[in-house]
Image (cartoon, rainbow, N blue to C red; front, side, top):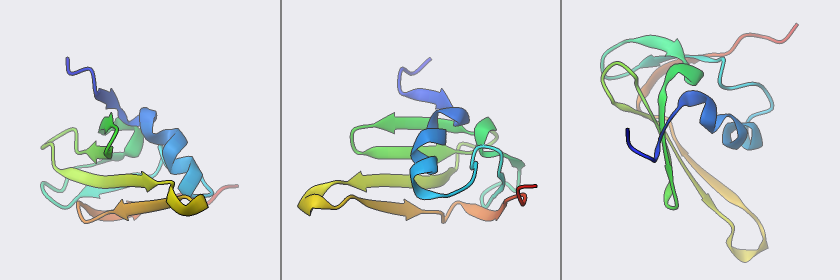
Amino acid sequence: MDEQRLDGNAVGGLLGEIFPFEMTSAETACAGCGATSGVGAAMVYAHGMGTIVRCASCDNALIRIARHNGGGMGQYWLDLRGVAYLKIEEAT
């Protein structure tokens, strides 16, 4: 197994820095193959240049995240082109 390949739960901390809700339980639909699953069921590749969340069915890049900490303020670059939709359940 690739040392940089993890399950989708590995991206929970990074997504928690961006979104105010639990993203690993959010449902995604892949724009490539149409498969639906929770973000936590996706495959994650994390390395120094950024993090890529891929569809477990077809390996399509669902979410790309890069973090830049220059100039005193951190920035996140988020690309969701591989997601047809993202369904987030309201907290009760």
